[in-house]
Amino acid sequence: MRISSSLSYRKAKLIARELTTTAINYSHLQAEEDARRISEKYALSYRDTLVFIRAFNRLKQKFPDKSESWFLRAAIRVVIGIIKIGNYRWKVPGVKELGDAYTWYLVVYDGKSKTYICDCFSRYGGTYRKYKICTHIAAVMAHRKMDNFLIEFIKSGEV
Image 1 (cartoon, rainbow, N blue to C red):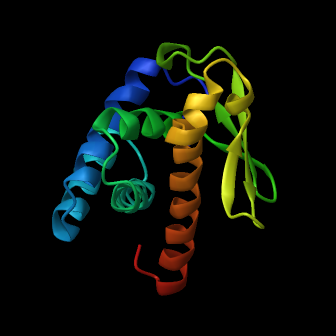
Image 2 (cartoon, rainbow, N blue to C red; image 1 turned 30 degrees about the vertical axis):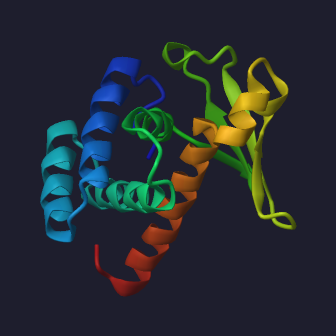
C-alpha cells in the first residue's frame, strides 16, 4: 500500500492509526464501512484499504499480546511502502521518527527454518529485537498477507 514516495510521516501515521484501530477492533461489516470511510477520506483504493484492515486483523490474531504501538509502527512502514526485491526478500523503509538509524532495512524469509530475519538484528539493539519480533518483520508479514488477500479478491471477484 505505497501511497506516495513523498508521503509525510505525519500523514502516514494518521492513515496507519485509523487503519490499525479498525483492524484491532475488527468486525466484518464494520471493517467494510470503515474501509469505505477511510479510503474516501484519504483518497485511497477501497480494495487496498479493506485488504490492509483484514491483513492487520490477522496479524493481531497471530500476536495478540503485542501493543497497539507495535501494530501502529508496522502499519506506518506498510503505508510508506515495502518493496519486494526478490523471492522472500523485502526492503522496509527506515523511519527516523520511529528511531530508525538507516534508510532501509532488509527482511528475508528463510523457508527452511520458517523464520524471518531482519538486518536490524545485526545492528545496535538487534539482539533484543530478534527475540521480540521487530516491526520491520511485522510490516513484511502484513504486506505478504495483503498480497494473499488481493489474490483471493481478484479470483473471487469480491472487490
